[in-house]
Length: 234
Image (cartoon, rainbow, N blue to C red; front, side, top):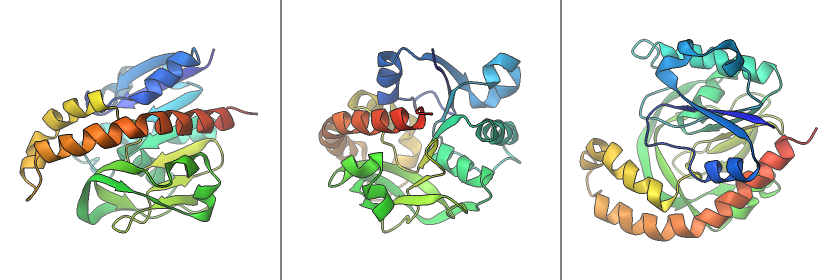
């Protein structure tokens, strides 16, 4: 049985559709809170698959959030051991940093639903199914593309939206994992951020989310299944 460890930074940013896939594949799943990584036992630090979720802090803010250094070291060790890794939003930014790239604030926040532009490599990757679909963006930071990685997707505001580092490592700046039910938690968790952005409100986000997240659900499952199957193939 494959083991999965999911690192969450905030309770409402969950693995979403990934949980269904892990259950379907009968993987053993452990969820841990990022601030308390040091409390883990040694056996917890060696999963087959490591998934790092998003959160409202910066990958470069270790002076305020010292646990980020533990997280970076754990990711680095996992990659060095050949483990499968998926980083989403903050998780992708931490991955980029581990791989030697710079992470920094973007020119503007990108929040809401919009489609991706897939690179040539992206069009032949599991992300190909996302062509023509809008995905959820909720970030204000960006990163340089790590050396030896492959760019898979972009948007106009954020050119580095998805990248791979070999077939076992994937970073997604956007949120492919969210379900319509998850979004209701997001609207509460991000209430202060939403209220501080002109011309943005929960009602309009909810209207978009109900349509887009529902349509994206089967596509997201297909993308994650295909990527995991490839990543786990010897």
